[in-house]
Amino acid sequence: MILGEQVWGVGIVRNHAPWQGWGHILLRLGFKTGSGSRNPAKELYVALKFPIYLDNAASTRCDPRVVEAMLPYFTEHFGNGGSRSHSFGWKAEEAVEAARDSAAALIGAQSKEIVFTSGATESNNLAIRGAASMYARNPSGSTARGHIVTSMIEHKAVLDPCKRLQREGFEVTFLRPAADGLITRAMVEEALRADTILVSIMWANNEIGTVNEIPQIGELCKSREIVFHSDGTQWVGKMPTDVEGAGVDLLSWSSHKIYGPKGTAGLFVRRRKPRIRLEPLVDGGGQERGMRSGTQNVTGIVGFGRACELARAEMEADGTRLLKLRRKLERELMQRVESVQLNGHAERRLPHLTNLSFAFVEGESLMMGIKDIACSSGSACTSASLEPSYVLKSLGVGDEMAHSSLRLSLGRWSSEEEVDYAAGAIAKAVDHLRSMSPLYDLHKEGIDISKIQWAHH
Ligand code: PMP
Image (tube, rainbow, N blue to C red; front, side, top):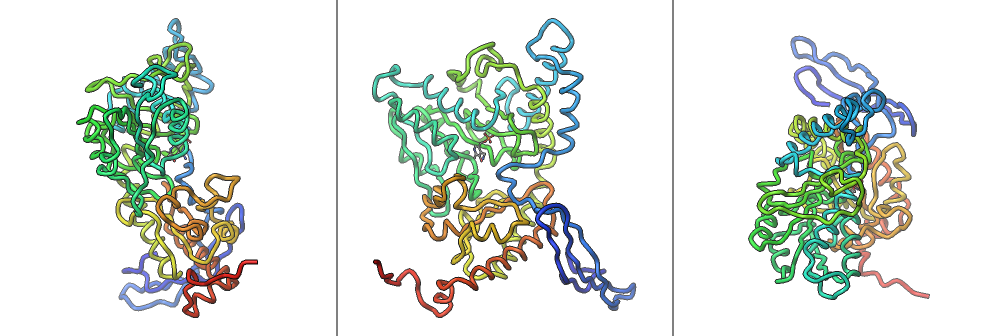
């Protein structure tokens, strides 16, 4: 709420947030009269839908405009895009090709350079494994098949195919990021060898939002004639992307992170300067130029295409608005709560994402205390295990601070009221947990906890 010409004061009187469904905040607002003097305060209810969704880096709500575009392709135009002999097939093919144009336009590519897949996981696997087998130095089975450079903070959908290739005879360098989470051109350059065949570095990190030096790394790879793949899942559709300017040869991104349906994604495969060839993972009917056989997911692709179109038109306005909201969220939390640490880079970061550690508080307990806010914690990322996040650990964040982290990610429907509510609720929950923490008491007394010698039995 902005104080301005008409409002002289605002305060939260009461908030009522059930865990599911709708809740409200009761606000007290002071309005000015026409002449600028103060009228008595009035109370106003603001409705909020609970739980508040602050986990847009995990997945996003499908935009209703996307759903609308998809609907006719379930029931009316349900043909197989591969059926050449009738109008049902033509209609489906036409829609898939229109979506390919929209996907290509979003990243500055040619339509023929887009391969539709089932998710960024598949796009990453196809790019990495497909390029590795095509550009391997020696035939399968022999040792020293080639060298690959990637980073320790990639998503598992990059790390695991790289590890598989390691078992198959490739050598892989996993670069450690700087303490602020960045992978730089200099780091990649230092790791390159005469037998390096592939570099795979994510555009922006999914846990901390840091943005790597992609155009610089692209230029480096081009000058050494090394294939360059980037996992753009968290970047594309949120920030302007140009595959030419960035010098990427292969780029993955996913529909469900950009307000499209799940189960659909894109892989950009460069066709000129140089033409990149991939060994397919799935053989069959030869769809997607032979790189990804199988009947196309026409409805999903139509939705993905519409999501790309909307992203292209709205990303600038969305990004500006979300950056303001994120800054407000961080500011409010830092003002209300002491000993908060920002994980990642303060500036080179996605506009809608923040990762904060609240010292002396366990992330999982904190999440239990804010059940009306949906977000992620640095300990639960690999679900079943309570290992602290490998991303935070490779930045040098200690186990304690990694365990006490929250990732909050805003999206197209995040509102200022939601951010205000979330900041208040998180601050309250942190205060409550700290009030029960003996370590926090020691800290308040000025004792450096890291220097305490604990007795071991
Ligand atoms: N890469 C990154 C950086 C991601 O954030 C994700 C999704 N968490 C993926 C890959 C996997 O994407 P998908 O869910 O589309 O398979």
